[in-house]
Image 1 (cartoon, one colour):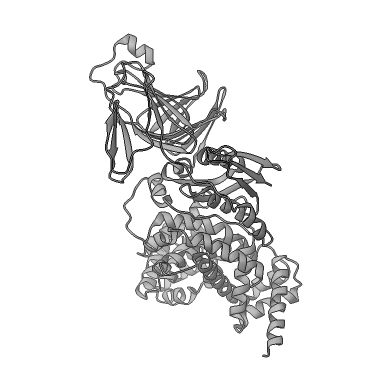
Image 2: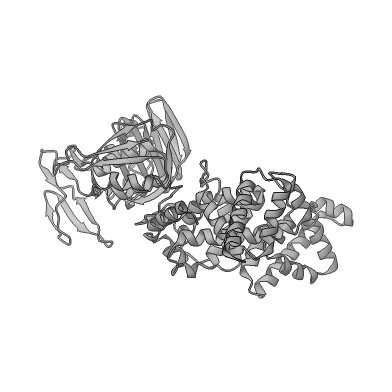
Length: 420
Length: 206
């Protein structure tokens, strides 16, 4: 066949396919299209057409990974039965999620519209680096210690803070508990663009997200452990056991059975209380958000929005609470704790919620041109990359565009404008 | 490929090439597999559904694509453009399915009449996926009674009770015989090293 004939046939195929996809084919056209499928002499063209149409079609807007979990499990089950699975060490799902999520920059991209390519280049020429580890510790006596500028490998101990290097190379700052008088409170604060991991005097681990404050006693009470958080933190609470039964008056004070053996761990999160029953969970309780979101990865916690409104959450559940109301739902644990492992994970997350996180992590002001309501994203992007790479992923969907202003050296004037 | 598509494909590659995800899949990381499934499934499914015009068939075809990805995961370590590879596999499998569909007069009639949801039977869905011939060969080697029960169940879609009534046996026996038949066919496919067929069979026969 000569070139013209080939081109004509391809055009014809394209027309037939597009009419079929639009459900406007006549019976004859449908028959002709399927005859081409069966003929076998245009397979390459057909495959290329399929590929193009597949890549162009809108991804399912209402896709929910949990609703498709059954389909995925069937695939997994089938390959396992066929002996083609891998014997993987079974970790709890949320741990697996972290492992796999680390350092991944998989963009959940939608359609990219050609005409955007030009504008994008100009708008996103500027960039802002990501945040990093760091915090400020304020002791009860007012001493302030910057926990930021510690050189790699350096181990130090000062003012009751021991700095250790863990196996994974991360630094942990251990509060040794020798500072301050009992009953006095220390305050650990991350600025915007800072994140931090700390081991408390009782052995509990806390990861603080950007723009958060953790207040904890310089020495923990033997009866009850109380800490306070504003912002977002991931907690892994160490079990602490009392040696003797409680005195009745103390039991009443904390509202527990005097025979119990565990020292409860309570968290005051932006005014709401979380009682921990030996467990790991994430809490997001920023001042600029009246709601507190608690996502449990292990064990059980009790969330109290106020004296009357409370709920008990088991692993995998998430409570969104504000005084007077609480919603408990199946949580997305991987998404909730992804920040701690250096990722943004969005599962149908609203544009405004995503931009709030970007504000905190990249220390920028965000403003909108247009209405952001109702726009959501799926995706996973590393937080360790600059802001541009995150915004580019969002632009790929064609839902938004961004303009970055870098500001001056003191980060003044750093701004991202969301154009809808 | 149009200019638009080429540019789009390029953008996707830039992003995904940067990832470790396919490398992890190549190493057999199940969690990476799960992430890839949920990343591509919402992208593949609308097109596949529109082509095969059946929720069930589309779902199975997409599962089939992911099974293929898993079975060939070692190759992925060398794949330079994972997204284009996934779409390529999907295009290929969809075309193979449609080639088979062409041979089915009943369904083609429905299609030509403009049906938006085709009524595939289980056996037909299986037949479109290259597995049919092997399963048929295995079925032929089943003992008579077992084969009869298997065919009534799979080809004619009868329930255990209906088969029991028709053959005058207990539905418990029917259930057991079907279990034996499935195990036999599974072994038959496994022995012939046709893993994809085996997995497809396992998917459809549940």
